[in-house]
Amino acid sequence: MPTITTLATDLDGTFIPLGGDPTHIESLQSIQQYLVDHRLQLIFVSGRSWSLTRQAIAESALPEPNVAICDVGTSIMVRQDSGYQINADYSDCLQQRMQGWDNQRVLDAVTALPIEIESQSPDRQTDFKASFDFPLADQTNVRRRVRDWINESGAPLSMVVSKRIDGKVGLMDLLPGDVNKAFALQWWLESKSIALSSVVFCGDSGNDSAVMSIGVNSVLVGNADEHLRESVIDLPSANIYSAKSDSTSGVLEGLLYFSQRS
Image (cartoon, rainbow, N blue to C red; front, side, top):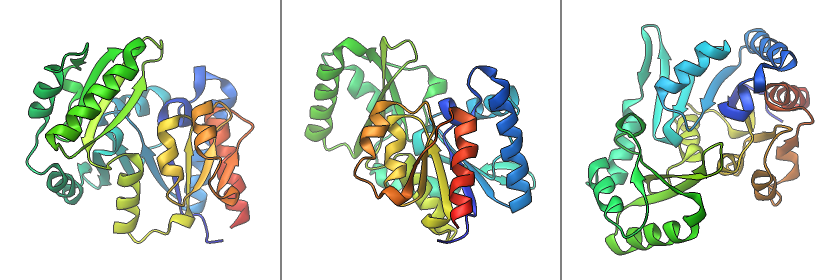
């Protein structure tokens, strides 16, 4: 097994210490020291915007990542000597996939559909991500209506649906076709000739399953939801580790597990 060179991780529910638990905070410090001692690259893979990622780094004293994949895979921020810069090559890639569509055109079309859905605030939108709120109780109808519109209009889009923590509001992101966390991470790794087998990825929820399917070593932290657990059942067992510990402590547990095997 190749030497582990990279830790890639989701943030909320995974890398960020849950509830400020002292055990998780201690694990975070251990991870940071391990990254330094073994010269590992750190990649954040999150649905958060870059500004909210920066907020998490400050509030939870997270180590600075080498790369941050944000906005559900629609932006890649790279650490430079002068600070973080968006990766222009990746933006060009997504621009081509949009085939002339833009955020405003998508927002206008979807909010005009005969369903209860509204666009999120401007700070939640990006050039390549149109984001909406809808009543979670109407999820089946909303998904069907939007899916029908995508098919009928020929819009080159894919749909990612999740929910707010309180469970009452559904969240929908419309992204360039087939673009998600997995697409962005794989694009970045290939651009840098980093082998998938040298990467450990950690996650806790269903939208992390796509990343786990691309061939990286994957860690389900102890608090991972059932959707994620069911999604990885058919993946090679050698690539999956189910940590006993929650969130940050589970990340440390999984990182050590795969590193000791390499």
